[in-house]
Length: 246
Image (cartoon, rainbow, N blue to C red; front, side, top):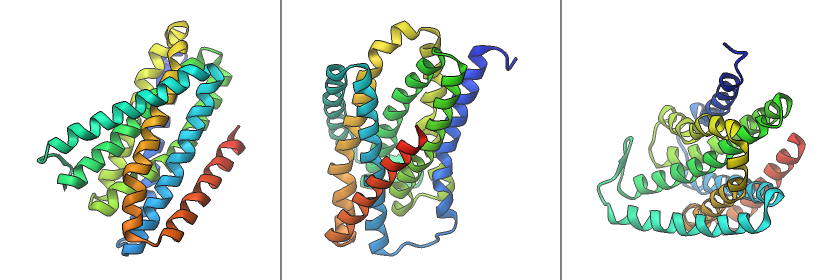
């Protein structure tokens, strides 16, 4: 059965989704966070997400500059409309999170899920270029997903969600990868033109999330100079990490 191309693509893409949950592992060893650590956590998450956004935009530009930029604008509009809709619903809950915390949790999960849609299509398209390239992309995305899972956990756990649930939601946010990889693999010529838009859309939504929610929250709990320094350092580390994977 493993010799079937579709099964291989689904299996590798599913593995990439599961690795997102590994980002929650550090929190099994951290039982309580001081207020300044909450701010630093937000800064780390911001740095990771901004670096991921830059990567998505760069990947999109390789397919089409204008489609990528259009995707960024669509992502901005989409996340703004989503945020307005969530604000109108006061009784939302995510796990044990309620109200404003639940809305922010849904936003971060939603943004990272958009990101996973784009990566799922990219993964399927990469397998269309041969198993070797597909395997390389699977490994690269799987490794990238770990710090992205960390970013999700850094937002959810300080607001009161358990580590296990944060790991679970991290994996859920990446489940579009195996389900989008198969149709993208089967219909490369159809999906490929939309890949740049999808990458840009995910990047635009993530950038908005960082500046509208993550950084303002971080600045409420830690000094501005510390938040700025940590965010910058993690942008650099993530970009170095991405380059070393290529």
